Image 1 (tube, rainbow, N blue to C red):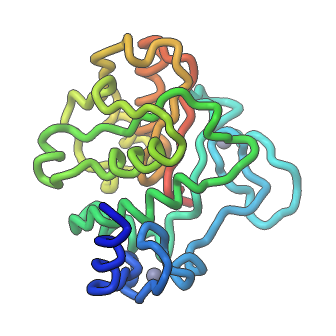
Image 2 (cartoon, protein in one colour; image 1 turned 45 degrees about the vertical axis):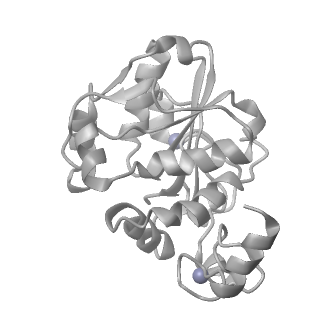
Length: 240
Ligand SMILES: [Zn+2]
Ligand SMILES: [Zn+2]
């Protein structure tokens, strides 16, 4: 769109914060407004550098948590913008369950602008998203993880693929299940259909929420088995 038409559209329909509806004035609508931004909680340290689990308010250095020391982890690093609470819960639930696909703009920008010297985007060669089963995709109309991954891929000029990793089994929604049940429910749900696309690649896997990590663990497992070099994970929120 030319700057003239964009200016005319902005004049007739002033951009609003997609999260709360407040007028954004001169700001673009691909960011949360300053008030929404101030309502987002960001993580503090110390944390587990592998799975991003927090150790409360006790000051100290980052260190591996006990599950990461004792259990097999297929992803190398998992990161999230903030805890799954408050504004994040509201925004993600509208995005996913109420069909507000436009929220991919501000939420995707949050992911794309994630800054962490130990997790530079320049490390990655390919962006993937957690796939939805075709049945769920028809119900929802879009894959929220793909919309987020697309914004990350564009912002960092990284190739995006949504064909190599597929969900082959329709699973019960993870939200209703306990930790152990989640692992059992998701086992064998994914398949790498086109291994040549991911072979030897350092992959950034995008999802909306990291709850127990069962889903991204399973994806990372099949990706490594199919020849990926490394899988790292970035999500909007992490359950506490
Ligand atoms: Zn707002
Ligand atoms: Zn950990």
